[in-house]
Image (cartoon, rainbow, N blue to C red; front, side, top):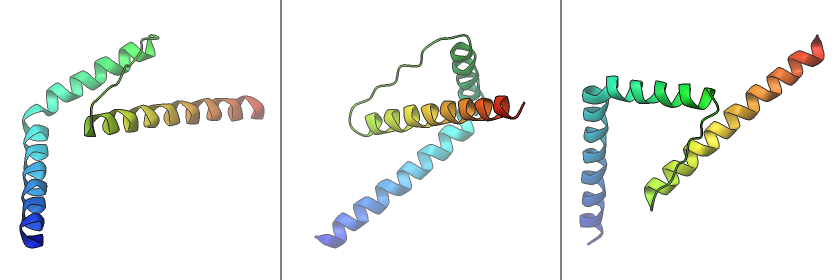
Length: 85
């Protein structure tokens, strides 16, 4: 039974890897366009609303945290630069 579960997990991991490579190869231009559009809208004051259910909720949460951390980092750099001036 344990060997079957392990084999199933390995098969799913291989499928996931294959699908990610396929999407990266076939949709790279569209993904880059979407990322640029998001960046432009957020730079103009727009909001990025993220949600999900299950694993996609974790992905949404991770993305949101990364964006907040990046924003805080840039604010801190600006404050440090202002103090040095």
